[in-house]
Image (cartoon, rainbow, N blue to C red; front, top):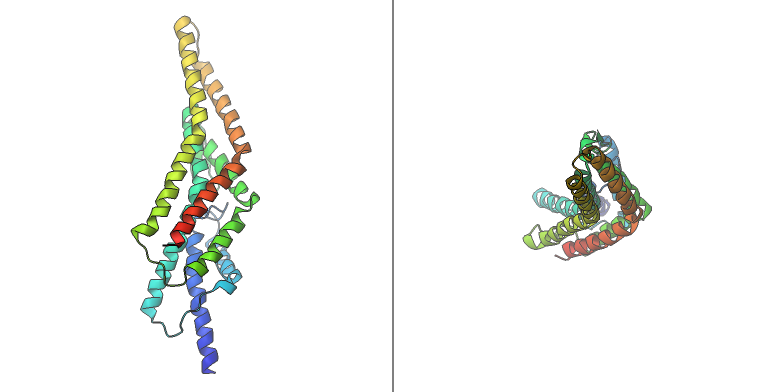
Length: 256
């Protein structure tokens, strides 16, 4: 009976440690509707994913002290948050590009309700969030995240991860990739809109009677929306490449 009780306690401790890491991931993983949903739904999702990872639960000594267990759970939550941030960076690159495009094209004046946060947001940003969320599942990246997470339970056992500067470097590199990818995606729109502004300015200098201000905004908005649609057509490939870099940063985080 004593052996069965110790085994049960060890399994429960392994479940708690794994749950801390899973809960940290689902804070930042861009699942559509997750952040705006009920708290109970998020708890049930974390609980279900933890149960699905039962073969990868760590074997925690039943005699571990409560203080050490608390330190382990904090470190596991920090590791989960790091993985979630790395995944969120890949999707935020698309949102950053949409934000820059909308600002240059005049879509910043058009606001709508973000279904994820229930707050006012730019139209292109909301479209990019919905498209990136759909592409995240359509390309099977959610399964890749689960595989990386299951592998992290093997490569980084419970209590072995420590928060340090070396562990933060891969996340900083992923954040740099987010900004560079977002700016590179927005550059075609910025270049086209600058050419439109220069052309309209030259026409205005040639003939000052032309009322080009009323024509400039519709032209810029139409061109920006056209290029944005072309980017959405290429979104699955862009998201795969960005997530490849993200997974490399995650492996670097797990190797620390």
